[in-house]
Image 1: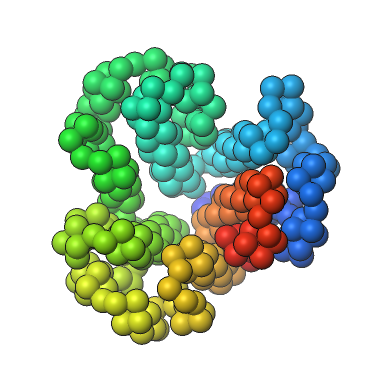
Image 2 (image 1 turned 60 degrees about the vertical axis):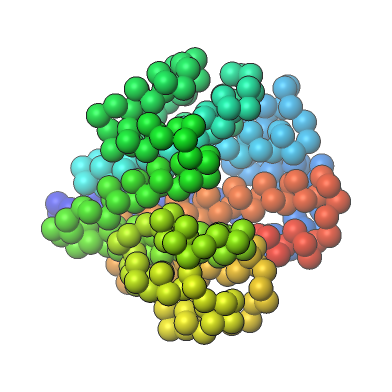
Length: 337
C-alpha cells in the first residue's frame, strides 16, 4: 500500500502518464513531414489541439493560427499539471514553470521597445503560473512601472538595468537569477535532490548553448563567462571558462565523456544542428533517470519537457511547410525523440 509522499507521486505520475499518451508518436512525424500545411492543420484537428484551433480559427489562418493554438494548448497543459499537483510537487513544479513568467516578461519588454500594440504583445504571452490578467496589467504599465512591480523580488536588480544593457544580456541575466534561485534549494530529501539535479542538467545545457552562440557571434571569453550560469550538474564555471577559449574541434573533444556528449562528434560546425543533438541527449538522460525513479518528480518533468518539444516541433513544421522549406531542412531543426 502506498502512503504519504509515495502516494503523492504515484497519483501525479499516473495522471501525467495519461497525458503523455496523447503526445504525437515519433513515427507520425515522418507522415507529417510529407503533408502540405493544410493537411497538417486537419491532422491536428483530430488531436487534443482541436479545441484551440477551433477557438482561434475565426481570427487567424496559416502558421499564425498554429502558433497561437499551440501556445494556448501548452499553457493549458502546464496549468493543468499545477492544478492536479499538491504539496512539495506543486511547489517544485510551480517554481520550475516560473521560467514562463520570465519569457513573458521579456516578450513584453521587447514589444514595448518596438512600439508593438498591446493586443499584439498579449498574443505572444503564454500564461502558466500567473494568469493572463496579470500580464494584461503589466502590458498596460510603462517600463519603470513594470520594473517597480518586481521590487522586492530576486529579479528587481536585473530589471533595473533595463535600457543600459542589450536585451539579450538582460534576458540571460534574468534566467541566471531564475536558475540560481532553483539550484540553491537544499536537497533535504530524494525528490528534492532529483529536482535540483534536473535543473542543474538544464543549466549545463543552457551554458553550452550560450557558449556556442556567443562564440559564433565573436564574443570574447570574458564576455561569454559573464553570461553563464553557475551551479551546473557536471560543467563547473572553470570548465566553462576553458571551453570559451577553445576552437570548435577542441571544444568537441573536451566535451567527450559528459552526460550530453552523445553523437556530438558527428556534427559539423553548425550551431542549430548541435543544439538539436544537445536537446536529444537531454531528453534521453531525463527519460533514463525517470525510469530509475518512477515514483518521483522526474516522470512529470520528463512529460513537461516532451510537451514543450512537441509544440516546438509542430511550430517548426508549420512555418517550414508554409515557406516551402525542404523536408530535410525542416527535420534538421526538429527534436524528434
